[in-house]
Length: 188
Ligand code: ITT
Image (cartoon, rainbow, N blue to C red; front, side, top):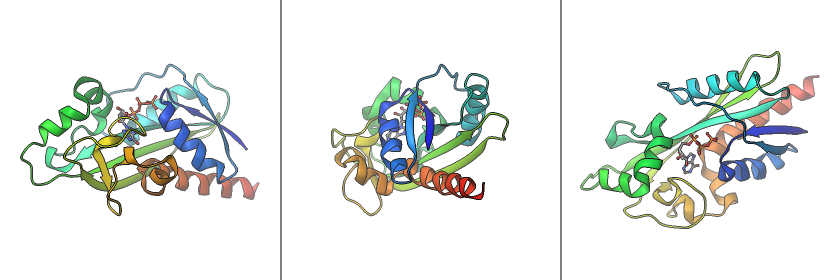
């Protein structure tokens, strides 16, 4: 079974490709120009991106929006994660947390599935953890050097893709999606 993942982020694509292969789904990357809308929630962003993508692509696809939510910063950068990463990066987040006793945070993904002529379906995944005191590791992308999921002592950037997929927000959303997608397929 083939499916397109609309993303400009190769790191995301490689994680998803590895995970969905276990479900017998072959993923292809498409880097379409989709304007990310300003919205209050990741779900809303994913839904709107999927609606826009449906106008541009004639096949079934997934598209997702993810973010890092730091509890002591009231969930910042959250839906602004991409902008904040470009402006201040991991070092900027660490500065904001200087002196903070609470370093708890979570990553979240809202994954949208789109198919021409059908309603968009949304699947979410979340992983809780803590923000490291300094960036650690070279793997992955984005905020990975900062995030230590509960159940591990390593940051995502110190893990292989397989290890990150055991914990990650993205993997959790993808597993929910894959189960739904395959069960729907079997019904036909
Ligand atoms: P798209 O083309 O799929 O939109 P993107 O990199 O812009 O790719 P997002 O808007 O979903 O993706 O990501 C928001 C920010 O959060 C961005 O800076 C990412 O690098 C970061 N991010 C998302 N998922 C992450 C993960 O699993 N680990 C570390 N950082 C992540």
